[in-house]
Length: 203
Image (cartoon, rainbow, N blue to C red):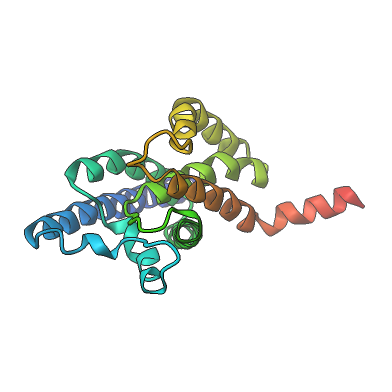
């Protein structure tokens, strides 16, 4: 009886994570369609560094893109990383995403070059990547560690290149800040039980 109940719970969790991320990615495409239909009226709502009027862009920038190719580049990794992260619980995932978006946005606002406009979900993508790679290690969970190792092995090289200042048209600052925000978020949400074991071990 308990096994059937556990299976049903896991099935529900998978369905909820899939629906959330499919809806999230679909929303990005709808927003870009609206942006195109309005003559790119939404583009100015990205992050404009060290401009008080641009602080609002911290919340809007992850949902805006500069063309469909930009959306497409972020859609697949956001769908994959978001789905894996959301398997841990929808509310927890939304909290993780909120912290990553805030951390990435504030960092980008502080260190990006003046007179630039940064938008796109890539900061969140890099944040979820960092979160998933580190989460298993800080929680000392075998499955989480395995997931992190696999993700790092498959995408680590391309994500490392993404934080290098090699392309002027790409915000490596946003990528770097997102990655750092994801790692810090994993540390922030470290489970109390794990912290308790550390204290006992230290004693």
